[in-house]
Amino acid sequence: MLSIRPRTRCRKRGSLWPVAIAAGLLACLAALPVHAQSRPITGVAVPDFAPLDRVVLDFMVRIDCRAATVAVSRHGKLLYSRGYGWSDVHEKKPTTPEAIMRIAGLTQRITVVAVKKLIRDGKVSSGTKVFRWLNLKPPKGTVADPRLYAITVGQLLENQGGWDAQGTFDPFTRLREIQKSLHLSHRPHPADVIRYMLGQPLQFDPGGRTAASNFGFSVLGRVIEKASGRTYEKYLQEEILRPLGVDDIKLARSQPRERDPREVWYPVKDVVVEVTDSYGGLVASAPSLCKFLDAYWADGEPRQSAEDLQFSFSGNFEGTTAYIRQRSDGFNIAVLFNGRRDAARQEEDDRALEGAVNEALDKVPAAGLNSLP
Image (tube, rainbow, N blue to C red):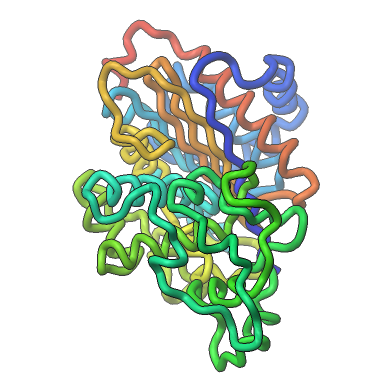
């Protein structure tokens, strides 16, 4: 069963988590040196970033993960990039620093950038009433919640559209039900899920409060397609990624034969990733995520040299843990893993990883950073 629960946070200044949490994660490695050291590590070692290696290796043990990558950039320069563990099921191929992995809910940060570019280009506005503009109809025999037609693009960007999966359900965990309800001969596409949800009630008035919504970001993918006249993936590639020199952030594929040769394997029963496109369906390498973070803030705005904002986001589903961070000292970091513990431990693990990563970066000396390889 598909279960994507991207956890996101955005804070502009200050420390995010108590040092004790990070210290606890770092201390765990001392008790597990054999496990950590048995995993191959690729890429160039840099002594100043050794604490970060320890964090990644320890977290791999914590979640029983087989492959991981990390990349760190600062002021447009890639400072550090390494791969850990094995990229294949037979443990014959060491994971390279440029290995591709699913990024789950981090996809939403790229979707936000795309929508805000369309807004800047005048193709759509934050006040556009989405469902009137998309002109979608509810399934036969159902009546749309009238509040749907008040939902704006801006509200979807802020997770204020009116859906709360915690109070009802995430439609992407009910694909078989949707297929049967709509009498589909194929697996549901994102547009099918949206049509089904037009016959379901909202949980709150649009704009009334905030609740993370995978579905809302799926709708934003359709906004991108209508406003641009291109598919979601094509618009990202042509307008956001290629100008940055990035060619390995792309839509994930369920079938191994359809994946990029650089993509790792996932030690879980596979999920139908295609339907998750604009809310959780991208793959990427860690260095390419850092290129993206060099160019855009995680809130979707282009970066300006004088700004010193901070953003931190996590994304998860079965077989995936992903984390990005933009710090006020200029560091960007991306960490990807091909594993995740059960959902009940997800929040705990995300907080521990964030605290440990930031403590490790705090230890990197400021002097000589520009001369790092």
